[in-house]
Length: 208
Image (cartoon, rainbow, N blue to C red; front, side):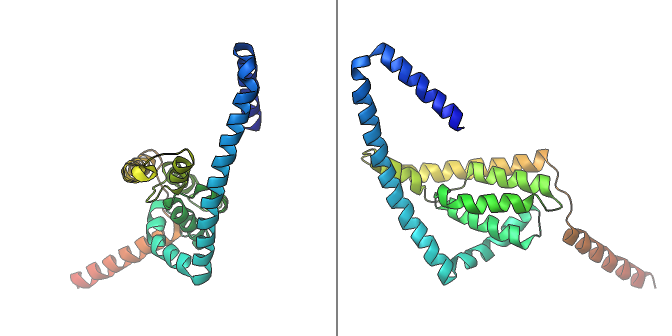
């Protein structure tokens, strides 16, 4: 990726020098100034939300949110690995707030843990789709970028982002279920065996 961006920069620099060499320096300085302004704005936004996430972790709020999301994550990811589910729930809860950078460590940890589960192919694919579509209640990073670029109404994108992310997430989850069939986990097999055992006992008692 670094090589690709370096090549893009070199090609653009060469084209600008050929087309308008007198404007090259001013364009470079203006771009650097905008980049610095945007970076400062994003650093401030991320600092606030990262600090809030640390407070949530220390106060137990994040663990509470993780417990609330676990039943849903267990059904969607089709895994019973508690460590993987905890990391996935933390990743998804941070992504919902639009802080993708803060969600990255949890995402990497979840991907590594899901690769070791018995349903690795389906679980990894589903987790990738959930991160790619990224349901967002509050697109914090995008709002920060719009503020840095001088938008008159930086929060206007919140409602459209919510609707589009809900649609894309629902469609992505549906397509994963259609094209990748999940395997039954050990807990699911045990539950099925238990239910069938009860039915057989009931049927046997009825025939007597």
